[in-house]
Image (tube, rainbow, N blue to C red; front, side, top):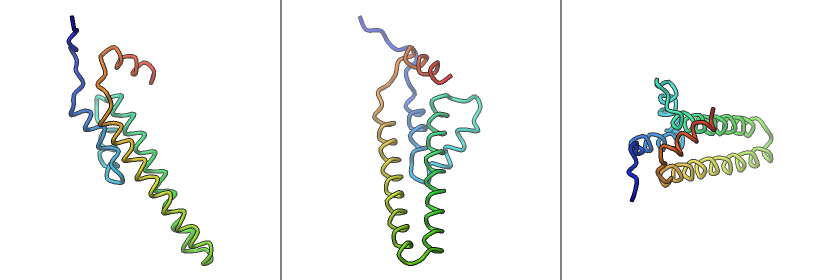
Length: 120
């Protein structure tokens, strides 16, 4: 006897959670989802994670670019190289998180309530 899930996970919500992990462009939906009422805990967690990741990358990108234009030539090349490494890491991390969101198994209502309790 198989129990039918009375509250199946909405594929549209999964897609919305995945959109926030698009590199650079995911910033717009992440800000929109954080302002939505009533809040969806899973969508808010994904949005906050995406905003932290994008914000830290953007800050680091600006600082390293500024340092490479101000500093001497030897340091300029090293900072630009480091900037490229961090940017590549950011894009690969975003793609990995996007893939993980899309491949996540669907959860049952019991698992969802457990996840929601853990975040409180």
